Structures are given as structure tokens and as C-alpha cells.
Length: 296
Image 1: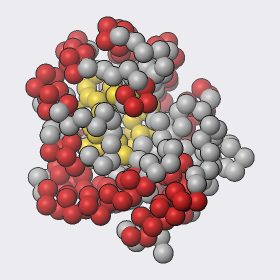
Image 2: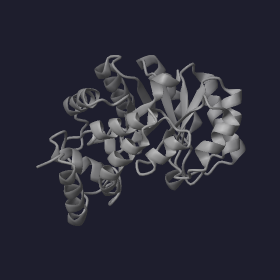
Image 3: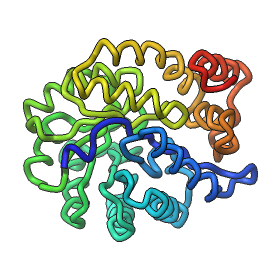
């Protein structure tokens, strides 16, 4: 199981037309390009895929589209989280029926559940499906922060909770979690900037924003860490750092969608309340991409 979920997993943007409709042709093109560029797998409708602003119907349609286009070439992890447990179960059951390889379920946002509430939420989802589940901890967006102890408890009590995407930025956590949940519990970084260090501390991959526009470099960096070649990984990561930072120089996914537009992958449109990034941010994105020879 672990071998299927190692390496670079782009948190796919959701291409949209200038009118705001889902651009199915661009989504299919993006999926094919990511696989050709060496991405280990794909994540559909995560935060970067604008999960807060797509409708429930669109959410399900995008997951089905990505699975169909990937056609088994790489594993697809479907974003199925919600701050409503019932809605998260509905999304997860749909992903299972559509043929997803796993579900990515974010810590409930806004309602600030206790650790016991988080445990009950994730356990209810796990009990409703046979799909492998990755927890998703991103306290900078959700406020609630699932503890190492709660993650380990869920890993022990729910056989299909197999891993976590950790976007806390705390590099103590992967080592502590390996001690509590065991080395087989799959840990994926949710932060591009610390992805190399995360792997050195026990991680095996990254669910990446930057990989949307620099998939080959992100895949090569991950491959180097998994081979224990941290000199090569550091060299690649050093080159990538300005781009990693540029992807968050304005509210995400604004910068990455603008970067994707420079590559001809889609328009830069993102739904409100995300607005067009500033001219200063655009210049920063362009400079970082030029430095990597991603654009002329």
C-alpha cells in the first residue's frame, strides 16, 4: 500500500473558463501532462482545487473526470472533506464508487471541534467506507489542529486510515507520529518549502502546489529523497524555493493559476472570494518561473 502513495502528488488546480465554468478539456490536458512529467499520483479537489467554492455537483464531477482521465496510470486521491461529517461521508462514498484510490479528508474547518470531536468525525467517515483515507491537517486554514495522539488513535482504531497530509509546518510531527502510529503510517507533506526536510524526518512524499507547474522538478526532488540522495534533493529544492515562495505571494490558488496560465494550461481565473493577483505578485511568479526555464 505504501509504495502506491510515495513521491510527488500535485494538488491539482481546477481549470476554469473566464466565465467561471469548469474547463473539462483543460482538466484532462492537465492530468495527462502531469502523468507524462512523472508525477506519482494526483489529488483532485483539494484546497488548491478550490473545494470551498465549487458546488457539490461540480466537486463530484471533477473527481470522476480526473479518475477517468488518469485511467489507472497513477493513483488518484480524491478530496472529500467537509466541516459537515454527513457531507464528507457523501463525498467519500461518491469517490469510492467513482474508483478513487484513496480519499483526502480535511480537518473540519470553522466549527473548531475538540480532539474527541475530530476523532468521532474521522472514525464515522472511515466506518462508512472501505476506501483508504488520508487525514489532512492544515491548521493555518482550519484553525482546529488534530494532535499526534488523536492521529495515532485513529490509525490504531481504523484500518483504512492509512496516512496523513501534514501542512502544519511542524517538523517535529513526522518523527513523533512515526513513534506513535508506526513507520507504516504514510506521511505526506502539505508544504512544498519543507517537503525535503519532512522526508528526512520520516515522510515519503508531498501533496504539492508547485507541482502543478513544475511537476518534473518536484518529482525528481521527491525521487532523490526516497533514494536517500539528499545532496541531489537539496540541489533541486534550492532551485525550487523561489517558486515555492511565489506560489504563496498572494492568496492561493491565485498565484498557481496565474503560473499555469503562463504555461498555456488554463486561464488564471479563480472563483470569488479569490481575486486576480497583484501586478507585483505576477512579476514574482514570472521571475521564479523564468529562473527555472519553465517560461521564456
